[in-house]
Image: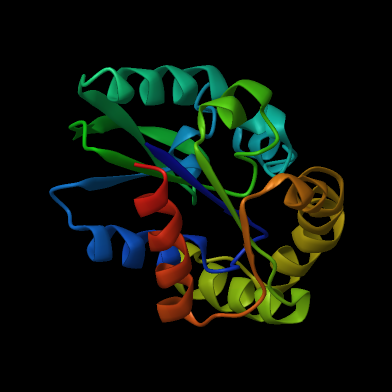
Length: 199
């Protein structure tokens, strides 16, 4: 079974995915994050990489993500890419992921790709207040990715918000569950009911 968790930037996708995996048990569930599948830009200059719209579906190597999910569904291990957000390049090393009964895939654009969306059995959307998400993104990008406030706000207004409006939010009307708050325990309970009923 594949569970998809989608939402805007800093909506709590990773947190929910981790909590859901822990609730299901690490022996039964594994997480695949869309962010690991950003296309490698190592052949481009730093200036060229800075001009890319990383919130557009074209920034993601969906073919590889789909292939990896299909391999996991067929009980085969994969070597998941690792991505460096500071340089916008892939690392040389990869992470081996072994197949589990339940695959949790999370990311802002996972419902924008028709093939990927068709593989997902349970679709979940996190519709969290935009101002709260922006505050979280500022904090994350400064502390974890070493970015300046001006750059964060410029990117948010130029690409993050417009791409959310065009590709992310419209997909929310196609989901099985939608959450508008951050009550993780209640979210896990609702997802658990779907997982059990879908077996």
